[in-house]
Length: 223
Image 1 (cartoon, one colour):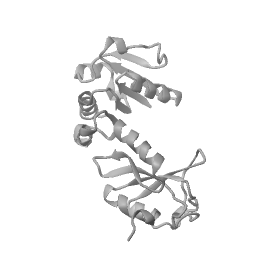
Image 2: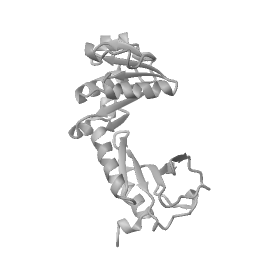
Image 3: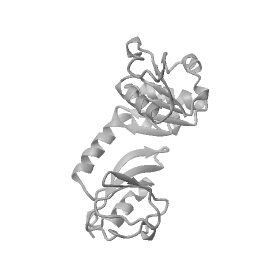
Image 4: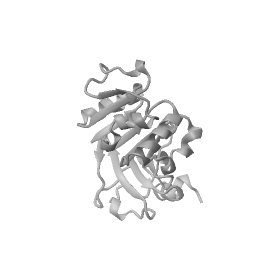
């Protein structure tokens, strides 16, 4: 894939390095001359430009990009970049970094954002995950709030410990997408049993989060 990243700070460079390592072509864009440091990620393309300017994005040839990641430290910049990428260049996938939690509600399809990544939410989620086995933790909001990526570490007292995933009556439109166990990633199949301590990642509508948590950890919702 060809990926453009608006914001060549520490976050943007880290994303670029990871994507390049995975075989993707990356363009880093930043309007600050001091941020243009090709020696930090020599395998990337670099462009000194303002990602909020249409002419700059034309120069970056965003119409050839599969993904645009708005990763600057300014939420206004990330919103405008996402909107232009989606509406003016038809980029198939946009990802917007949310720096301030009060702005998270803006990062929706209305502003051209397919996926928002909230740094404050992720940090708080990691804290919650560390102290609360069996509690459902929301990681990302997807597609204008219609569904969320959530995590639940299965407690030993769950009635579904050892049961095949295909026999668990998950709520409608709830999908188990990944099982993390002993530092290994498992793609769930109907025959795959879930075990105590598994980190389960789901895509689930927000309205059904409580139902999912109640199903897997009844103790979290006592009658």
